[in-house]
Length: 113
Length: 113
Image 1 (cartoon, rainbow over the protein chains, first blue to last red):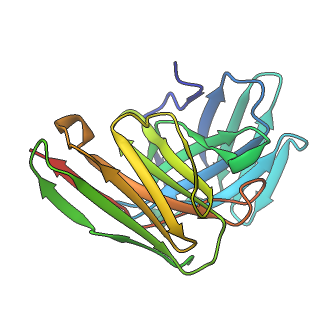
Image 2: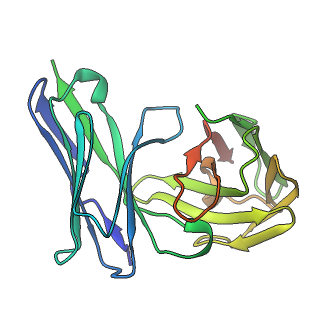
């Protein structure tokens, strides 16, 4: 039973437009959420995070929104650039020792020039 | 970039042979993690360590063991490799394990024939 789900395996957007990547979770104990970006043959790199006490966090072109009642988070990239083409993973964790992350299965984003 | 290296980067081995993967960090972070990445599953936690000689199991620990004798090194051992352990393995580190982000190494691609 996947506790973190990314239901869209792939997404294509035009350069300059907005990319919206979605993630749903089932465990109401999750209180910290992260997005990672992964290029082929490299390890995931941290992008942005949000605590459950917030509903929005922004960092440059990247904004993460959290809707706790819907158990849903989304990552907005504006404007999208070809270099943003990668696999995006959302991850969640519960307060406590070791911050074990539970990952979604990932969404391949392709930004078309 | 966090100072994390993994060795080897690629390995092909045969069923039934022992395999050890090494993760080395230069950040002096307390927490270290081993994940595997498989299509459709995202990243899944195998084992983690919260200090020298302190380790615990993750979601998919069967068939794997770990050791941490020094802060900087975290070893993952497959005692008798099976084809189901063919995967890409990532090591991650975090400073405190509570609110800190996990930073990932470049990965090891393991093929078990």
